[in-house]
Length: 333
Image 1 (spheres, rainbow, N blue to C red):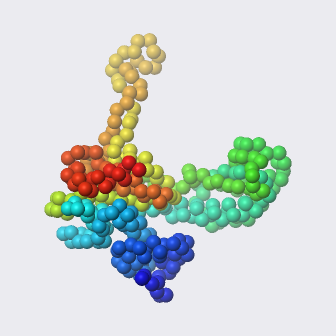
Image 2: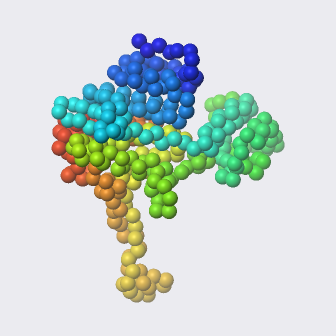
Image 3: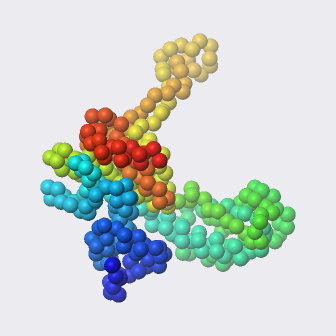
């Protein structure tokens, strides 16, 4: 049985306070000792949560009926998981796509703001958005914001959907529903207020350094070649990061794009003299087609795990029938 100690495990205790079932989940896990030992001594919140992500993917693989080994060494490198079923073996490296510090601040501030707004006795729903130029949430007094909002609601007396007010230049409140079932103001936030960093996924040419996902694409090339192993990247997407599953699908599988074809006269159409066709479709291939060693991605988002397999049939995963059959069932979910 895994027992919690009292020293140097504040992060674990804090996490368990917010996730009371975590230790019970860990108890039924085959690699519980190795995971617990890491969590028990970890001082960095980022590294702690990365280990939590490793656990949840490991638990997922175990529930699929796969034998799992944590941090097995290959040529001096340690992918997070080695998976085995029958004679088939694969390696998996886990990456937690964290939210930015700004998004965490927004989430904390928004939670406290919602809590105070719900003390107002109006049966309406509000959508709240923040000005993108707002940099320091701590400088804004929540009680003052709520008092100003209450004053605006009192003065209006009659409410209509679409009514808006901007408070302290940075906070916009919009009425989106009236005569709700509640006797207090209900609120929803605006995800566009999140600090959405596209370069955490997309490796833009102007970036001086590779992002973490790009680094993992080639990290185990020697291991893959030497051992002839399928290789997967497992990405745990924090909700506040702003990323969605479809973005990974487009980036790695490909997406439909539009182009303009020049050089054919359209006759008398003003302004389109040099354009043959506007809006013709073609497919922009994704990263799978450039990274033959990558067998696929496991994406965990909102506690749900989905699989993106590399569509290239010469990819090594298609020679591992037991693994492939197991994973195709996941992809169909």
